Length: 472
Image 1 (cartoon, rainbow, N blue to C red):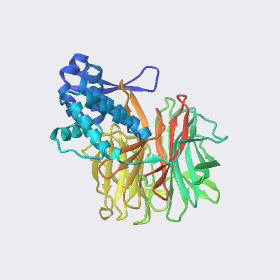
Image 2: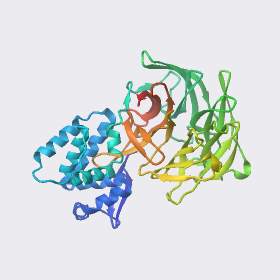
Image 3: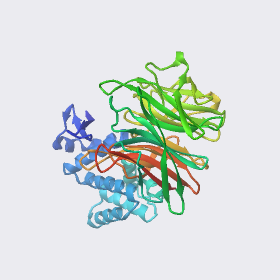
Image 4: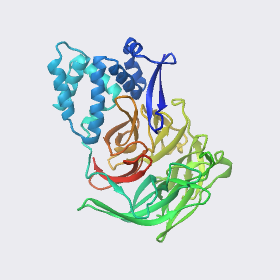
């Protein structure tokens, strides 16, 4: 039996995919003997499939070596949108191939895409299906035409003296842009409790530039504050839901106590969230992202506790919450955690959920009272998932996405992605690596989105905020 495991690379925060055969690290000979199984592996999990073909390529298999080249070129394409590398790859294969093979038909398929043509050749169609199994939505990515209006810019003001500026959100309220993020020196540390720093600022469409200034720092001597998310309540007050954690001396979360901050005049006032006591999660819970529903004028969020049981909660004022239902499905045998909710025009709730090894999209109708959900597991991993619903009903997501380098080390990047109720497909990778993602997104005029996220910079361990605009 073939299995896949992540192994931490010694003395780093990186991970490498390792492939095992009957619980033994697989050899090159065993890889080549089992090469016919890679497509079946890819159908179950594209990332595993890519890992397998890259190991096969390293063992000397020619067809999979070309697939590896396509995958690595695809990664570059997400960063720069340039198709010239695909053109070069396909030209080489089509000129050198004397007999039809998988790589010949793959090259033919990609060439038809570049020429905006189609092919009815059954072998080309088979090659196309193989590629889409490994890289879901390959064709949609090719024709997405999503691009950055300007390059990503680091946001740093004099008050931001700490090394780990992370988990940000971006919101536009009364024509002012607000940013909130965790301000600390480390990802999590008993002696380094994070505070929430809030900035406010503006954007110049003529100069295509941002200007932010310090607004306020929220902190607590007993709690690590993190993952702030803005929302506006029924009284049109700007609010901020915040995760509060008690951290033990082993740097682990032992109690979760959510907080909420309200903008009163020009200052923020913070208080603990009040949750219906008898329905509270054991050791507290984390209300991750509140979204107000115009259909019934109430706020909704998905919360989870240390046990990672995901629950739908509801609020009328942004301070008092009660549980509606626990979410569960037999389609994913994993615990859930971070999740963002949005609402369609007809009141349908859509949720983008992070599980341990894969993502999940869940939907529920207003008529059901949001007590029953339909689940669609994704073949990809997520991190800090967020999304918006455009006026035409189309959805755009932002999340941490998992790629692989040629040697199967894990490559993490923040992406802008197409999303519907059953799939999520990366369209554009933003400048990012290692510890990154958790985007804040604002839908602007002219099909533009302001996009804020964090990423490790040139020095590992130092995280900065990055902001850009993309056009769809």
